[in-house]
Amino acid sequence: MSKVSKTDWKHLAEMEDKDIDTSDIPELDDAFFQNAEIKVPPKQPVTLRLDADVLTWFKSQGAGYQTRINKLLRSYMESQTHR
Image (cartoon, rainbow, N blue to C red; front, side, top):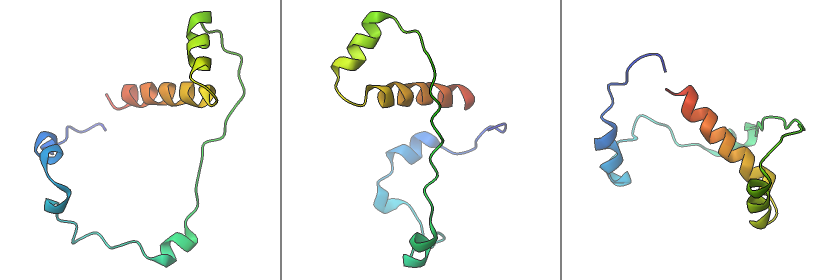
């Protein structure tokens, strides 16, 4: 975001869900979900050099280690682009 937010994020984070006024937001009905599409960014195979101990640790966590590495990289990317 290029503008400074005027939202009181601390206050919002402390609110209970039941206290949030959502009356101006329509409920999602069956028609919405009939037309909804899941859009997943395409994966691209790459060669990536990682420290051996880092790769061993990720692999030791079981199947899906590449997905977990991708999620961590995405999280870092998003934290850097929202600065």
